Image (cartoon, rainbow, N blue to C red; front, side, top):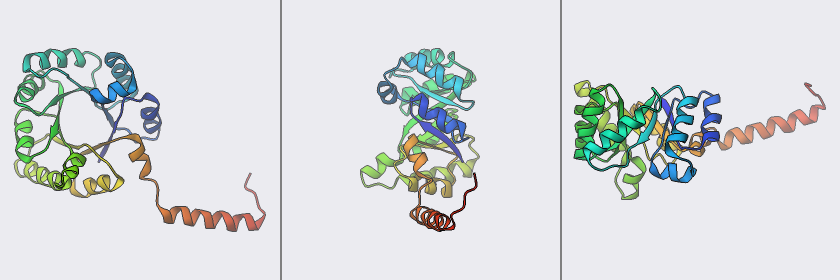
Length: 217
């Protein structure tokens, strides 16, 4: 399973990339705002840093304007993935941009029907939002499983990019179900390393080592 980093913060991306933990990056208007950077400038910096797909989102709501914005964003670098919303106009833009050879990430997916439409429109990635479904007492992970089954039934090549990841459990569950990609904030990815028994075991080892009075260096 591929890990995408959901941020526009360069230092956080670089740290994970150095460890081989960043297969790509996703951004959105909110993350660009949080970074305080110009969208074209920061997206170019990220795309130069990361070998994998870098999602840059359009902000227009009508198809023709989305297509124009998508074409401009695609010129930033060869690894740019144009991110469009899962609306009828977004699907129109997806079809045109994907036909032109651009990677397209269709975002804000909340149903299997939406995921089917995105795949038919040629999406490279579909982004179901797990956490936002959980917030309204629906099972976000069930949606991932349902999309996985439907895509496998018909051989769609669109990759399932699980988004709105809120916890390390979300990541483990996505891996078990078979999501192709997860995108998560840097802190959530880094939190995967923690386990209380690891901490307890290390503390015991260090206490015993101290008693030996030895040094390695």
